[in-house]
Length: 551
Image (cartoon, rainbow, N blue to C red; front, side):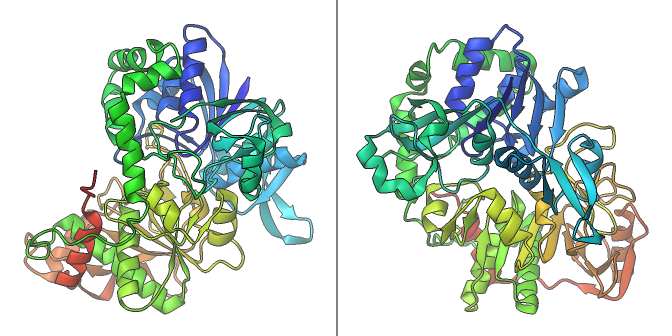
């Protein structure tokens, strides 16, 4: 059976655990369609229940996303077939299935290794209305069954999903045999009618509905303003424990026995978590709901000199500010990890200068306000401060990559080449990294800024895999300097560089940077040392980096 799993970044956690309980030790040969395979979903692979994944990301997520040893081992053993797409192109496959058409046109994936890998599901075709233009076409995908977790629903199955909707909609609509829905709370029909504008799955599509509180644990479920259930934040400690257990098959087996197999039901799982832990996750969500203002700077924040990582983040933020001022971008897509922090800092710098941009996240948050210690994952503070909550198709397909977009994308990458093409999918020896996620889609923005640490292993002459093409990449900020594309040029050149006490003069510094690049690096004649971080910039950054100490 082909199962579609949805409900936020980690999918329907409680339902996934139940799949493991019901089928562990058997060979159900499941094909899983899930945009972001992480958390409990990785355990389906580890226990041999999934033989195929169709996804955009498969990664271990705790403090940040990192390659999953479970996925890498299953691929190496030949027990798992992995089909990787971008966030948008996977949703477009499901859209085609829902519409009952054989394919859907797309601007994503074109010219990438994703297109080559997925020849069964992707074609480059001539625009039937303009044969001089090529477009991508993704093949329709129809899961046998969809399992989705939502906020509330009535006994007939009419369901309010989380907001933003992210990747939760189209797999449910495309499902051949309907949807199994779990929700935080089942409410009377007359109550649900008050929120009919927020219903995303109509009851006639639903095969069953179950009340499953904390059904997305260990990931978060913000309340977009319904007030009929208790929202909760991500359980970072739980994810850290899962990540640590994943270091060996034996320790992960023990972890799964403790948290899943030895718990006869979801109720037993919640009891094992403990009421104090559950209450703390809900308390964090309540506390963060109004926490959109920047925290006070840590004591002596600007007195300690900026570290190398902080300096790099400040320089990326300067590039964002300069790009917004130069090109008039109205939106900034904040990529995951350090890219998000750089975008958050630029947002604050622009606000201080009286300029506003809307921050975007790939799951559908528009115009949210960054908070100290925040991330691009859906949180109560991010959701409640957003000006608009939408889904991945609208966000990536229209606001980021649409014909009239006014978007600047800020992204990290595993590797880059001299043209700004990126790789976040496979190593040179073929091991899977984390996948495209939204990176391939985000490269369709009006302009793109990349950031990554510089080494010959990451700045390479030839990418082992092209996750996305870099035609719209205008700058790359590395740990050693800034590479830009001159007007009309396709190749990056070094225009600015960081100071280095180990290189006594400009010539030595440029030589050191060139030596850390895998291709013959072009050097601008006017390449100059980057100005030091100011006390204002450092104070803003450290306020954003400060983890919230509220209970």
